[in-house]
Image (cartoon, rainbow, N blue to C red):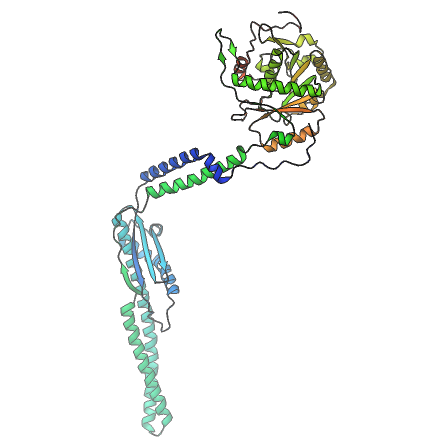
Length: 537
């Protein structure tokens, strides 16, 4: 690398919530509109329900108490009574045999307002008349249960008062006899007056309780009857549509913020790796054909690679490189395709270049050139002659590109590129040409390119435009362990990034290989030559 970085680069941040919404406003708008329509249509498909309510105003007096009544406490107590099993059982008996207590519990809702002593009985049903009837019956059942409870309390109170009255009358009779026998007994006379006064107060209290029980026996001042509703309580298509739209907007905004902050917030590879950018390569379009039917190189890509060639030549000259390892951080970032383009451009410029597929696991370059059944680097390391493993591809009538494929995959590829036989094979290859371009495996996936990097003059990194910062940091850490200089990096797929070619481990043809060969202008027949390097035709 050009330097040894010591501090981690600052984290790349997205545009923020407002900026993310603005960036993805079209997608968010479409999502909200779809949710709005979906919420409205879904509401229309749901059967309507109607809610009717009966209001119960509690009396502000207490029949059996002379102390002030706590309205909040009383309201809570009466709300509990209203939802009791006794009330629902009486209401179910009045409504019919098909109504159960549990069914009423599910349909009846009671709300209380302690400040004014108000209970509201709300019932939801499929028909307006049913909702109103049920609410009224529940309110009436509550009134009956309350009146029965008051009557029971009244009977008990009257019995207690009658017992006290009988006791007082007995004592009064005894005192009257004592006073009649001794008119001068002033103490007995005073007690007689006291007992007579207590009996009069007791009789007055008994009359008041009876009157209050008759007037406020149920503890209810008024019941406002429920009426059948004119409009359904649910569903509410407009409300549901608006709620769906708000939820969709929130979710879409959150996803936009996440995407803008995580996916679209791309780090600067040059700042992280401290290496120069040699070229920015866009995605390829479809190849076109010339007047004679021959495939033509994509114009935009051709210009990008011409710029790369100039930057590459300058970087190579700075270190007087004889071999360059083309690698990437992860699979699918386009290193093999970049190696082919680079070698092709160098060959057209007249450079004596050799292209080597050292990725003996994936063998992507080998598959692209339909050389997967031919001897290659593996055979060379096993003792084959260099001339026997080189295949030539004619870019044009005047230009040939020598390529050494990966060869047959070894049974156990781990660590092979670090062995002496493979080091010797690489030395033979680099000595046979002015410049060797080696397609290596991804640095963060396999150990092979790290071993191979120690045998080349320089490293060229291919970085996908969609790479995340954590991958760059891991790549930088790996490169710190390699002394070979990094001449620069290529930003690949700059338009919309993201790998579109999987990294295979084993056999399997690349589905894009045919398109790649057409775009490159490489034709394996009739121009392919299997003769040794330097042979004619």
